[in-house]
Length: 322
Image (cartoon, rainbow, N blue to C red):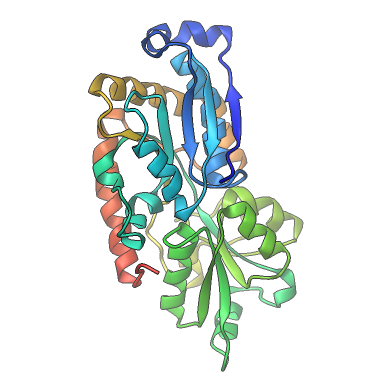
C-alpha cells in the first residue's frame, strides 16, 4: 500500500487563531486520510484545505494517501482509528452512498460508523475523449457505441465512483455498449486516457481542464447545471440532449462515530471557518472545483439526505456488487 505524507505547519498567526483547540489535542499532528492516490481531486482538495485548516486549529495537519477498494481501505483506517478527532477521512458522495451498495461485505457503513464534520467542495465531471478517436460530440460517441460489434471502454476510479455512475447513466440513456475499466484514481486513469487506451471518461475537472485546453483531450460535456468558466465552450450534459444528471459530487470530512460531541463541534466550526477563507476558495476555483458551504449544524442532515439521492440514482442504473 502506497502512503504519501505531507505536513502543513502552522504559522505564528495560526497559533493565535485557535489556541483552545490546539491545547485540547496537544502538539501531535492531525491526520487527514485521503482514500485515493495522490494527484486526484480528493487529494488536491484535501491538501489545499489542510493549509487553512491548520491555521484554524492552531496545529500541524498531515495528509495521508491510503488508496484501494474504491476508497474503502482508507475509510476503514479512519473507522478503526481512536475517536479523538485526530484522524479524519476526506470522503466523497460516491463513497458515502454507492460503496455500501458495491461492497455489502465491508466491515463498516459510513452512515453508521462515521460522523460528518463538514463539506470541503463540490466538483463537476467533464466527459472527455482522445483527439485521435475522431469523436467531436456526444452524438459521435453514441454513433460509435451503437455500431455492430462495438464495445467502448470508459475509465472509472473504481466501482461506484463518480465516473462509474456518470458513465453508467450515459450508457443507459443512450443505449451504447460500454465497459467500465477501474483505476485507483484520477491520475492513473487520465494517463491511460492521454495514451489513447480508453475510449472515454467522465473525469474530474481538476485533472482534465489543462488537457482539454491544450488539445490533448476533447471535452464533450460537463455534469454541472451551468457551463464552467474554465471550459466555456464545453456544453452541459443537459444541453447536449443526452441526459440531465442531477447529482452534485461533493466532498466531506468525517470522524469515527464515537468521537465526543464537543470535539466534533470544534472540528465543524474550524472546518466552516477554513472553507470560507478567500485563499481557499480561490485555490478551488483555479483547479475547477467549487466552494460548497453547509452550516455546521446542518452538515449531518445534508449528508444523510443527499446520500439517499445518490443511492437512488445508483440503484436506478443497476449498479450492483461486482
